[in-house]
Length: 250
Image (tube, rainbow, N blue to C red; front, top):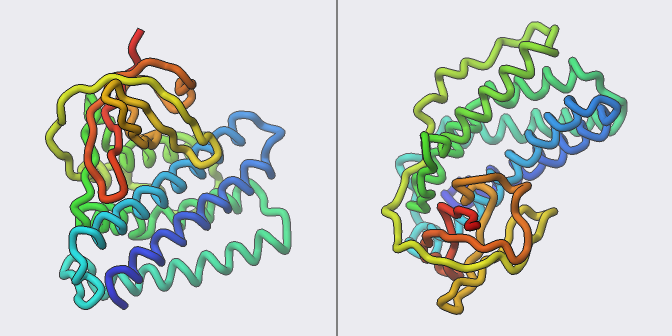
């Protein structure tokens, strides 16, 4: 299995997980707290899929020979883990189509997925490509770690099964490589694709900058509105500039 195939499988798994967790959010919509939890988990997996897609493109652009060679950071165990996850996920999807799963069954599935190597492999793939995300204040860029803390807190309240608990401390150092800040730019938000979780900023320099929820360093995705003035940094990607470290201006 070559490097790009590994990316494709990982991207597909993240997308399918997002769809499955959104399905869970509709199953438990009578409880707002539970529904909100599943929506948040689904959106997290969706952001992983989007970032991996950008990383794959960045890798292909900067390392065209990647199609013909392997990278040492992708190990045989990684590919076997992905193949196992694909098989397990297919079984979960089949179960969900056949029957209505209980909250405990849904949480069992979540724990099995999150206790796999998927998050560690995600980090390796991002760092392998050289696609770098800027750190946020107070280390909140450690989004895998924060994600795991959210899951553990929810499990402590609702889970009654016997799956091993998530070892949150194992993810304390799961950061994505950072890149130097560019000059601070100014602009306004001109387009928002809420369902796909991305948008565009028109800079005062006349350039359009794409951004994702993880690029917001002050505020949240829910705060994003058209015509909101912002300041930001940027990175240059093969398909155009991307805004990051976005801060809302008064």
